[in-house]
Amino acid sequence: MLIHSASQLIILAGGPQRGQRLGQLGIITDGAILIQDGKIIAVGQSEQLLADYPQEPQLDAGDCVVMPGFVDPHTHLIWAGDRAVEFEMRLEGKTYLEILAAGGGILSTVNATRQASLETLLVETRPRMLAMLEHGTTTAEAKTGYGLNTDSELRMLEALIMLDEQSPLQLAITFLGAHAIAPEYKDNPQGYTDLLCEEMLPAVRNWWPGDRQLPFVDVFCETGAFDLNQSRQILSRAAELGFPLKIHADEFDNLGGAALAAELGAVSADHLVATSEADIKTLAESDTVAVGLPGTPFGLAEENYTPAKTILEAGGLLALATDLNPGTSWCENMQFAIALACRYMGLTPAQAIAAATINAAAAIDLADQIGSLEPGKQGDLLILKTPSYQHLGYRFGTNLVKTVVKRGEVVFQSQS
Ligand code: NIG
Ligand code: FE
Image (cartoon, rainbow, N blue to C red; front, side):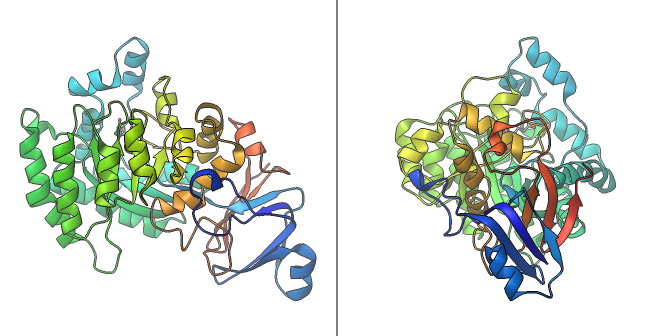
């Protein structure tokens, strides 16, 4: 397939963009891209590629931006039920951590998810995947974490593998058995931490199909969830078993999770709202990607967002994600995350786009395969109904995606 006449072809070549380098879009005006067998073969000027490949089936992208598919590197994609009632409770004055401490929050979704059959989980999750794809996400990370015992967590992993195989939306899977203290261990968080290390992580390691890359292991390092020592214990055990690492750090309180991520060589540290300046510096000097999730403070109607400028000034690698989940951010749409990041994290549209593509790919360790339009990479791209890239960020609340291409196939086409 030869896509040509793009008003702007955004290639984002040259790998993940650190610090102030963030936002180098690499725009080709009147651009074209050739994809064969799911892979990008060539990018360049339309005139050149049309002359070089006259036999290729053509797709005219006139007046449109063509860019890499969004990569959403932090989602809790799979769950059962909803928490609409808690949303109302929060608006009436209860905080997120108060609801969690009272056995609601994550634990109410754990109840619903444990009771759901595998089929129910698949049926409830598929529409969210479709919404993600239609809004331009071509690869997403997806966490377990609403099972909190070996059987339910393995069922979530099994469902995620099936969904990845059935859908054009590619998934990078994460085991988040350490999402909350399981209700059975309510008064014994250390007991649940030990269970994770001694039983659950080895069970995942043994069960995991040998032909798939190992999942990430993630921990919610937070007041009321896992403290810094418990987070260190779980992540160190996971590393020992060969798992790559992620962490939820400093969403509400500054427990030191960001520095722990840097110390353990985690692939990403996510949230980073309450992170100290010293920890931001430590993180920025490491290869761990800092993932900002602006949908979360927005969803909770809170004031503080990830301090993107400080992270960039310190030379950090910054990515963006939706944090799609039923509690804090039921949002499938990376365009909306970009719009929020431009307003509340102080990013320019160009910076937000790079954070949502090539740097987001780095946050799931796939920057060599996706996140930019370079020969040899997967043919994952979007055709936007806009003539220039700034419309991303500038506009919000409607879908700007016209066409989604995954591995060289058109998987979504807008009717308008
Ligand atoms: O990233 N912080 C922990 N996990 C999610 C919320 C999950 C939930 O509330 O169900 C988050 O915000
Ligand atoms: Fe999360």
